[in-house]
Length: 255
Image 1 (cartoon, rainbow, N blue to C red):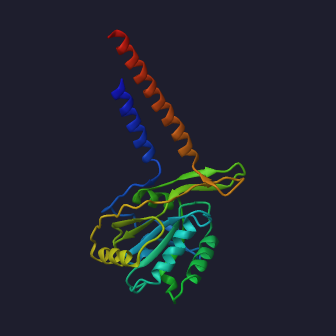
Image 2: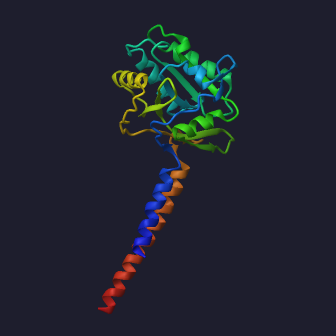
C-alpha cells in the first residue's frame, strides 16, 4: 500500500510537470512550411522568414503584461552587443502563440522593440508574426513549448507560459534552448556559431520564470492549476501519513 501511494505521488508529479513548460526536442526539425502572417499582413512560411539563416526563435503573446515584454526587451538589448551581422549571420523571429492577436499588434510590437535598440539594427532581421490556420500551435508542439489558456471573470484571455529562446539551424534543426529572460551575448554568439555548423548543443539548466494570470483586484500573479495541484498533493500526502500512523499503531498493539 505504501509503495502504491508513493508511486501515485511520483506519477502525479510527472503528469503535472508534463503539462506546462519546455520539453526539449534537441536535434529535431521544425516544419519550415508552416504559414504565418507578417507585420504587413502577408502570408509567409517559416522557411521564408528564416531565409536559410541560423535563427533565434521566441514564442510570446504580444499583449503579455508578464514576462514576454521583459524577454523581448532584454533580447533587443543583448543583440545590440552581439558582434555578428544580423540578417546575414542570423535571423530573429518572434511568434505569437495567441491565435486571436492581429498583424497590427505584431507590427506595433516590432516597432517598439526595434526603437528600443541603442544602435542601428537591420529591421528585416527581426520579424514579429502571428499564426495562420493553427500554425503557432503546430510550431509550439514541434519545439516542446506548452502553455495554458486562462480566461478571467471579465472574459479577458491570458496564458500561463515559460520564457525560452530557441536556436535553430538554417535547416530548422533545434540546436539549443536558452531558458529565462536574461541571456549573455557570448552565449548567443556561441549558439549561433553552433547553429551555422548544425551542432546540437547541451542546454544550460536555468530557473525559467512563468507568466501567470493576473488577479483582477491587484498586482499579484498566481497559477490556478498550481493551486489545485498543491491542494490535491496535500490530500494524497495526508492520506499517506494517516495510513502510516494507523499501521504503526496496529503493529504496536499486536506486539
